[in-house]
Image (cartoon, rainbow, N blue to C red; front, side, top):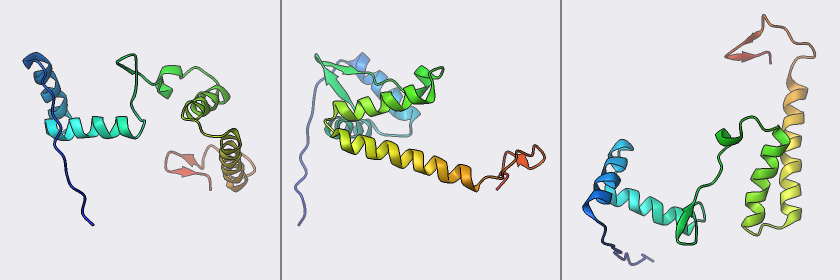
Length: 123
């Protein structure tokens, strides 16, 4: 069953359109494709609007100096904001830790700088 497509539109001033057009061209997109991505991001809760303005999410680059645990907690806080249950979040954390443990177990018992090149992690 095919879904019916609907056109949506808005009016903006020429200066804002010029900025949007430039942003789209930088990413190799048309203005229509960029607007569609923005709408889909809002629909999928990747873009959050509060008080009529887009809330900027903190990316990891913003808190580079924080500990690993703090970074994980901030990511989990995003899940809590989206109403994910606490048992899901704790299982998710456990999965991450199990994955890290298995990677550590696969690595050599001793660090050898001769084997540690950028393309060979000693495994």
